[in-house]
Amino acid sequence: MDVNTAIIYYSATGTVHALAQAAAEGAEKAGAQVRLRTVAELAPPEAIDARPEWARHRRDTADIAEAGLDDLAWADVVLFGTPTRFGNVAAQLKAFLDSTGPLWLRGGLADKVYSAFTASNTAHGGQESTLLALGNVFHHWGGIIVPPGYTDPIQFRSGNPYGTSHVAGDGPPGEVALEAARYQARRAVDIAAALKAGRAA
Ligand SMILES: Cc1cc2nc3c(=O)[nH]c(=O)nc-3n(C[C@H](O)[C@H](O)[C@H](O)COP(=O)(O)O)c2cc1C
Image: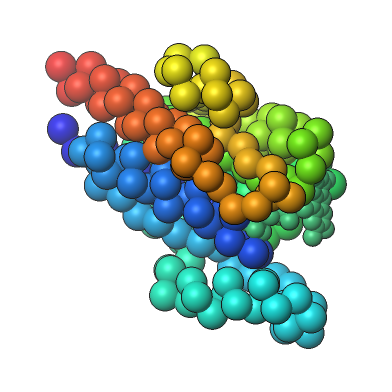
């Protein structure tokens, strides 16, 4: 049974993008149809150009499509990725979430599987508060929140039951974080597949 999976993320300098790509790999390996989508940039060009790594990441990922409401409507599973911004969701992703009112009103966001991942610069920089803040939105949507918990050995190494998280200050995501992202996506897809099969039965 096809499980449509949208991975929707914001990334300024590539960390969350790397996790999103790993999540896409995990979902594909689980047999899902996958759409990898970013969201619109809100920062002015002069802010971006002032940080070469930000400008470079934008150039390198210019071919990734921006998410639309149609991607959410299509999806059985949505994984959201965001950098931590003062312990909270990045404005760019929040702006996209705030555009979903019409779809929400039609009940178009309910009963889907949701999960989230993040990065912060420091180890105690607000990863969990960011993931829980995204969870607030999923509650309002009537979503089925599927966190990774400690349901796989990789979780005892990567260490965040709320969702894959990486400390960007330590460098780009390594194999443990990438494997955790793949696992998180696979688990979300597997649970959505079971739900879909059960509903169809
Ligand atoms: C406005 C702003 C606020 C930030 N707030 C935090 C924070 O609260 N805690 C933290 O550890 N890092 C913080 N950071 C660092 C980002 O979380 C980090 O650069 C990001 O996770 C890297 O992901 P990316 O490469 O996908 O952009 C902040 C960065 C910016 C620009």
